[in-house]
Length: 550
Image (cartoon, rainbow, N blue to C red):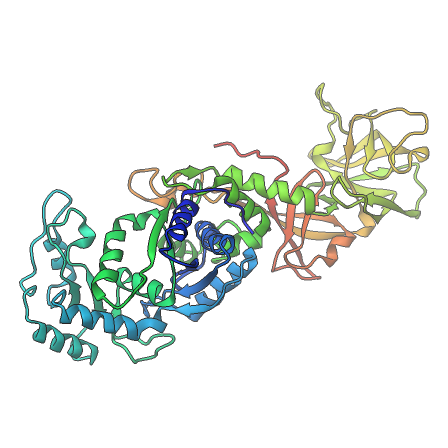
């Protein structure tokens, strides 16, 4: 479970329990099932579930399904999968639609008290009448309808007598309030759409600001933990719970700063455009900020929770560096990912004095450095090494293979370059070496040292694999607003994906989708869901070090 330390939310809960405002703690995570969860949701999930666990309470999953036009069971299933992947377990699964009858009763109560009315203004007219931050709004000409007329009209709205947009139900509060949310907000609108759970029972649906407090309190939520953008909505949250007059212990809303991560987008609308325009392969594209995308890329849930713990819970919005998330991923994988050898840019090496046809099984460490686990790997006369590990004319501090220079092959032998072969374009095609048979395992009996150790795979005993080298999807810190016009497409990183073919050690052929490895000296990689025994695919999760340059 994520450790959020001490914070202002816990201070508020402590005070409520001490003053016996509540005798328990119950929270909820209430996503709308109209898209996939992203890294920002991971923070909200962590805060909701951690608070319940700390106080021995319950955190429920509640799907805010008040807009049947945009919602789908596909998203419900994906939300559940992501929460479980992070390691959290909800107490119960509820839906806002479970409370439609209660919400309707609350709306009738407001009408009966003269605190809600049916309005015929269009959406544009309502915005026009609303006023500005410096000017009060104007009252709707329908604001003073009688209770009887409002009750009749609302029941007729419910019966489907009117068309969408023709009428809405609004709370009667204060059109001169300095808080625009209190200026007679719409609480019910007409939507003639089939709901994924209630079918065609309803053609009027509550707005979020009305459904949220009613659902919370009806469910027994004590502390409704929300991101900071709902702070200005809290007076309305409290007003509804007070005025409907149906609840003895209303829920309390507390706001925290949302997670803003640079070089990413979390807007569902903009993410949908990336998917629909084919800029990414789908919602689970490993470059996306969605949890399913990060899962596919190979980000461990433990690393994401570590990241959430490190940034903590704050009251003020800020932007967190994506490099911190990558750092947490590296920290976790360094301690947990088995080691393997893969040559991303291969060039052939022939060890001339190694017997032709001979092979031997060498023992190479596969576990993280603090453990002692090894696995066999086949060595032979012809191997592949990284092209970057050889230079004909090396600079002073180049300690890898070069003419006349001796290096260690990881877990194998010392080898010395004797000559090279080149094609008609002058590119090296084969490097010829000799080996010292006394250095099996990578150590010389005479105690001599070499400065370079390089990885390799046997030409006859390796496998081909497709490697997808992922980088950040955007090349500016704030892709939405960098140009002042919100044209985020122009801020795409053209090099966010490079696909190459490489050589991997044979054992990696058995990797299952989601399996994670450190490819020695190359970074951390994860077997992709597209991978099959016939076509092996690995995604680069992160490099060994943060090499990103803004």
